[in-house]
Length: 112
Length: 114
Image (cartoon, rainbow over all chains, first blue to last red; front, side, top):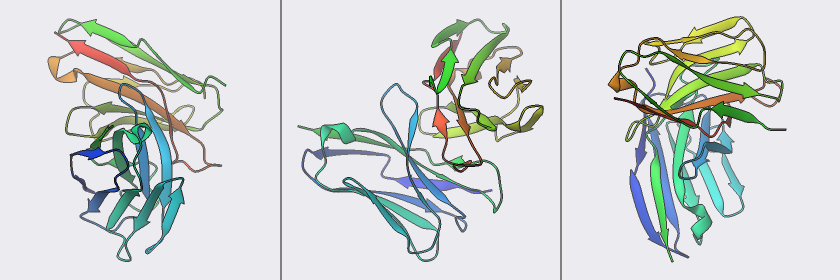
Protein backbone atom coordinates (compact mmCIF):
# COMPACT_ATOMS: atom_id res chain seq x y z
CA UNK A 1 0.00 0.00 0.00
CA UNK A 2 1.06 3.58 -0.55
CA UNK A 3 2.83 5.09 2.44
CA UNK A 4 3.66 8.76 2.75
CA UNK A 5 6.32 9.95 5.16
CA UNK A 6 6.47 13.62 6.06
CA UNK A 7 9.47 15.35 7.57
CA UNK A 8 9.92 16.99 9.88
CA UNK A 9 6.98 16.06 12.09
CA UNK A 10 7.12 19.46 13.71
CA UNK A 11 8.92 22.68 12.92
CA UNK A 12 9.38 25.92 14.81
CA UNK A 13 10.77 28.87 12.87
CA UNK A 14 11.28 32.55 13.46
CA UNK A 15 8.95 34.84 11.56
CA UNK A 16 10.56 35.89 8.31
CA UNK A 17 12.62 32.73 7.89
CA UNK A 18 12.29 30.25 5.04
CA UNK A 19 11.37 26.63 5.62
CA UNK A 20 10.85 23.37 3.77
CA UNK A 21 8.58 20.40 4.45
CA UNK A 22 9.12 17.11 2.68
CA UNK A 23 6.77 14.32 1.66
CA UNK A 24 8.30 11.03 0.53
CA UNK A 25 6.54 8.04 -0.94
CA UNK A 26 7.54 4.40 -1.08
CA UNK A 27 5.95 4.17 -4.53
CA UNK A 28 5.44 6.35 -7.59
CA UNK A 29 3.01 9.15 -6.97
CA UNK A 30 0.14 9.49 -9.41
CA UNK A 31 -0.84 12.82 -7.95
CA UNK A 32 0.36 14.75 -4.92
CA UNK A 33 -1.89 17.12 -3.04
CA UNK A 34 -0.88 19.58 -0.34
CA UNK A 35 -3.37 20.65 2.30
CA UNK A 36 -3.15 23.00 5.25
CA UNK A 37 -5.05 22.64 8.51
CA UNK A 38 -5.42 25.46 10.94
CA UNK A 39 -5.54 24.32 14.53
CA UNK A 40 -8.97 22.94 15.39
CA UNK A 41 -10.33 23.31 11.88
CA UNK A 42 -10.75 21.30 8.71
CA UNK A 43 -8.25 21.05 5.87
CA UNK A 44 -7.88 23.54 3.06
CA UNK A 45 -6.56 22.52 -0.34
CA UNK A 46 -3.34 24.29 -1.35
CA UNK A 47 -1.86 22.77 -4.49
CA UNK A 48 -1.82 19.76 -6.75
CA UNK A 49 1.20 18.29 -8.55
CA UNK A 50 0.98 15.57 -11.13
CA UNK A 51 3.96 15.64 -13.45
CA UNK A 52 7.57 14.80 -12.62
CA UNK A 53 9.55 18.01 -12.15
CA UNK A 54 6.41 20.09 -11.76
CA UNK A 55 6.54 23.19 -9.58
CA UNK A 56 3.68 25.42 -8.48
CA UNK A 57 3.53 28.57 -6.40
CA UNK A 58 0.82 30.39 -4.53
CA UNK A 59 1.78 33.58 -2.78
CA UNK A 60 4.84 32.63 -0.71
CA UNK A 61 4.34 28.87 -0.88
CA UNK A 62 6.06 26.77 -3.55
CA UNK A 63 5.56 23.05 -4.02
CA UNK A 64 7.69 20.75 -6.19
CA UNK A 65 7.44 17.14 -7.31
CA UNK A 66 10.70 15.43 -8.18
CA UNK A 67 11.36 13.83 -11.55
CA UNK A 68 10.93 10.32 -10.19
CA UNK A 69 7.57 11.34 -8.69
CA UNK A 70 8.40 9.91 -5.30
CA UNK A 71 9.15 13.03 -3.32
CA UNK A 72 7.54 16.42 -2.96
CA UNK A 73 8.66 19.48 -1.05
CA UNK A 74 6.72 22.47 0.20
CA UNK A 75 8.77 25.63 0.63
CA UNK A 76 7.61 28.75 2.43
CA UNK A 77 9.51 31.96 1.87
CA UNK A 78 9.62 34.70 4.50
CA UNK A 79 7.26 32.91 6.86
CA UNK A 80 4.42 34.77 8.56
CA UNK A 81 2.21 33.93 11.55
CA UNK A 82 -0.60 33.13 9.10
CA UNK A 83 1.47 30.19 7.81
CA UNK A 84 1.21 28.39 11.14
CA UNK A 85 -0.76 25.16 11.12
CA UNK A 86 -0.48 21.53 10.09
CA UNK A 87 0.56 20.72 6.54
CA UNK A 88 -0.46 17.38 5.09
CA UNK A 89 0.43 15.77 1.82
CA UNK A 90 -2.02 13.41 0.17
CA UNK A 91 -1.45 11.06 -2.74
CA UNK A 92 -3.45 8.93 -5.10
CA UNK A 93 -2.44 5.37 -4.07
CA UNK A 94 -2.86 3.79 -7.48
CA UNK A 95 -3.66 5.26 -10.84
CA UNK A 96 -7.36 5.88 -11.14
CA UNK A 97 -8.08 5.36 -7.44
CA UNK A 98 -10.94 7.49 -6.19
CA UNK A 99 -9.38 8.26 -2.83
CA UNK A 100 -6.35 9.87 -1.23
CA UNK A 101 -3.82 8.52 1.25
CA UNK A 102 -2.37 11.14 3.60
CA UNK A 103 0.93 11.58 5.37
CA UNK A 104 1.01 12.09 9.13
CA UNK A 105 1.33 15.86 8.86
CA UNK A 106 3.91 18.49 9.79
CA UNK A 107 3.05 20.92 12.57
CA UNK A 108 4.46 24.37 11.81
CA UNK A 109 4.82 27.04 14.49
CA UNK A 110 5.93 30.57 13.63
CA UNK A 111 7.53 32.56 16.43
CA UNK A 112 7.21 36.35 16.23
CA UNK B 1 -23.01 28.21 0.16
CA UNK B 2 -22.48 26.68 3.58
CA UNK B 3 -19.96 24.23 2.10
CA UNK B 4 -19.48 21.07 4.17
CA UNK B 5 -21.21 21.05 7.55
CA UNK B 6 -20.77 18.53 10.33
CA UNK B 7 -22.75 17.96 13.49
CA UNK B 8 -22.15 17.69 16.34
CA UNK B 9 -18.87 19.52 16.93
CA UNK B 10 -18.18 17.65 20.15
CA UNK B 11 -19.53 14.37 21.50
CA UNK B 12 -18.80 12.17 24.48
CA UNK B 13 -20.00 8.57 24.38
CA UNK B 14 -19.78 5.65 26.71
CA UNK B 15 -18.39 2.36 25.51
CA UNK B 16 -21.07 0.40 23.70
CA UNK B 17 -23.26 3.34 22.80
CA UNK B 18 -24.16 4.04 19.19
CA UNK B 19 -24.46 7.34 17.42
CA UNK B 20 -24.50 8.99 14.01
CA UNK B 21 -22.19 11.76 12.89
CA UNK B 22 -23.91 13.98 10.37
CA UNK B 23 -22.32 15.43 7.25
CA UNK B 24 -23.99 17.55 4.61
CA UNK B 25 -22.78 19.53 1.62
CA UNK B 26 -24.62 22.00 -0.58
CA UNK B 27 -22.22 22.06 -3.53
CA UNK B 28 -23.79 19.16 -5.42
CA UNK B 29 -20.55 17.19 -5.11
CA UNK B 30 -20.58 13.57 -6.21
CA UNK B 31 -17.76 12.42 -3.95
CA UNK B 32 -17.91 12.37 -0.18
CA UNK B 33 -15.53 10.84 2.34
CA UNK B 34 -15.10 10.28 6.04
CA UNK B 35 -11.68 10.46 7.69
CA UNK B 36 -10.43 10.15 11.21
CA UNK B 37 -7.43 12.08 12.47
CA UNK B 38 -5.30 10.79 15.30
CA UNK B 39 -2.08 12.31 16.67
CA UNK B 40 0.94 11.33 14.60
CA UNK B 41 -1.13 9.35 12.10
CA UNK B 42 -2.45 11.97 9.72
CA UNK B 43 -5.81 11.36 8.13
CA UNK B 44 -7.09 7.86 7.57
CA UNK B 45 -9.97 7.13 5.24
CA UNK B 46 -12.92 5.33 6.83
CA UNK B 47 -15.51 5.16 4.05
CA UNK B 48 -16.19 7.03 0.88
CA UNK B 49 -18.92 7.45 -1.69
CA UNK B 50 -18.74 8.28 -5.38
CA UNK B 51 -22.42 9.09 -5.66
CA UNK B 52 -25.83 8.53 -4.14
CA UNK B 53 -26.38 4.86 -3.43
CA UNK B 54 -22.68 3.95 -3.83
CA UNK B 55 -20.27 3.54 -0.93
CA UNK B 56 -16.96 1.79 -0.43
CA UNK B 57 -14.54 1.04 2.38
CA UNK B 58 -11.38 2.96 3.09
CA UNK B 59 -8.39 2.04 5.24
CA UNK B 60 -10.13 1.74 8.61
CA UNK B 61 -13.81 0.82 8.08
CA UNK B 62 -14.32 -1.58 11.00
CA UNK B 63 -16.87 -0.36 13.52
CA UNK B 64 -18.40 2.19 11.17
CA UNK B 65 -21.30 2.13 8.73
CA UNK B 66 -22.28 4.62 6.07
CA UNK B 67 -25.07 5.14 3.59
CA UNK B 68 -25.66 7.70 0.87
CA UNK B 69 -29.33 8.04 0.09
CA UNK B 70 -29.00 11.60 -1.24
CA UNK B 71 -26.23 13.59 -2.91
CA UNK B 72 -26.17 16.06 -0.02
CA UNK B 73 -25.88 13.80 3.03
CA UNK B 74 -23.35 11.21 4.10
CA UNK B 75 -23.87 10.12 7.73
CA UNK B 76 -21.34 8.00 9.60
CA UNK B 77 -22.71 5.52 12.13
CA UNK B 78 -20.78 4.12 15.05
CA UNK B 79 -22.43 0.84 15.88
CA UNK B 80 -20.97 0.17 19.32
CA UNK B 81 -18.50 2.81 20.38
CA UNK B 82 -15.08 1.77 21.68
CA UNK B 83 -12.32 3.88 23.28
CA UNK B 84 -10.20 3.23 20.17
CA UNK B 85 -12.71 5.32 18.23
CA UNK B 86 -11.81 8.43 20.20
CA UNK B 87 -10.66 10.76 17.45
CA UNK B 88 -11.45 13.80 15.37
CA UNK B 89 -13.68 12.95 12.43
CA UNK B 90 -13.69 14.92 9.20
CA UNK B 91 -16.11 14.76 6.33
CA UNK B 92 -15.01 15.93 2.88
CA UNK B 93 -16.59 16.35 -0.52
CA UNK B 94 -15.36 16.92 -4.04
CA UNK B 95 -16.58 17.00 -7.60
CA UNK B 96 -15.43 15.25 -10.75
CA UNK B 97 -15.63 18.57 -12.57
CA UNK B 98 -13.08 20.30 -10.37
CA UNK B 99 -11.14 17.17 -9.54
CA UNK B 100 -12.12 14.55 -7.01
CA UNK B 101 -8.89 14.94 -5.07
CA UNK B 102 -9.39 18.65 -4.44
CA UNK B 103 -11.54 18.06 -1.41
CA UNK B 104 -13.54 20.47 0.71
CA UNK B 105 -13.44 19.58 4.37
CA UNK B 106 -15.92 20.17 7.14
CA UNK B 107 -14.83 21.62 10.51
CA UNK B 108 -14.68 18.22 12.20
CA UNK B 109 -16.37 16.36 15.05
CA UNK B 110 -14.30 15.69 18.14
CA UNK B 111 -15.45 12.37 19.65
CA UNK B 112 -14.42 10.97 23.01
CA UNK B 113 -15.39 7.45 24.03
CA UNK B 114 -15.03 6.66 27.71
